[in-house]
Length: 289
Image (tube, rainbow, N blue to C red; front, side, top):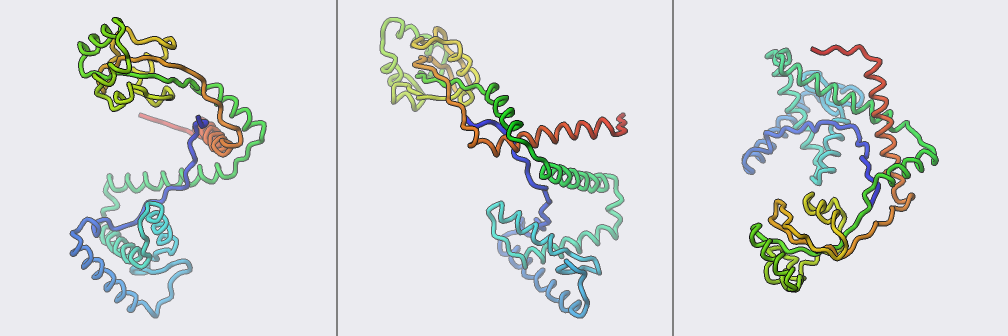
């Protein structure tokens, strides 16, 4: 079982795609995109004699659109498994900028709900950027990572079970099966005849499994059973009523240190960042209602 960890993600940059174009019917969306492209081309023709600021790929009424914005959107589309057409992305960014300026002329950015949304987006972007930078600067010694490995290993639930079960729709059916088993009938044959789970075809055999792969009620039941024991009462879960036979149990081997070293580093970064946030908050003048 791998040591659990959470990877620190890169800074999240909102994809500036004009989603309205994609929500149109395919034919109309294509026409709209072509119209936007023609409009952008005309705008570019008008501004051909103007010099764009460094790093800008276009401008709208003098406000630049950064080449980095196009690259960011393209990267997000690619990461999402979509094709990134940078010319189309630029056309949509131009449309967004045109709409943004129109909204500003109407004073929409001064509305409380819009202002709050803009502030939240700014705050999230800056906070993510700060955490990403601080995390990238952090280093940990081998001793620290080994200590984290030991701590994580000691907390792992390494129990693995091999069990068979017979799944019934009602408690009465499950109790009847338990009674038949007590009279000496074969668990395997009873599973084949009565279980509504596909595993019934194999005599109810579930093979080896870890505790966290089963529904909680099933796991709790096998954890209390002795090897070779069959449940004395039906075990109810969201799937129905289980009659369980615990075949065997063992402890899973610990993951090799080197195989989880990257995860340990990420976990150490996450913990260190959490402590850093607590320190920053403790030092800040925070007031709440």
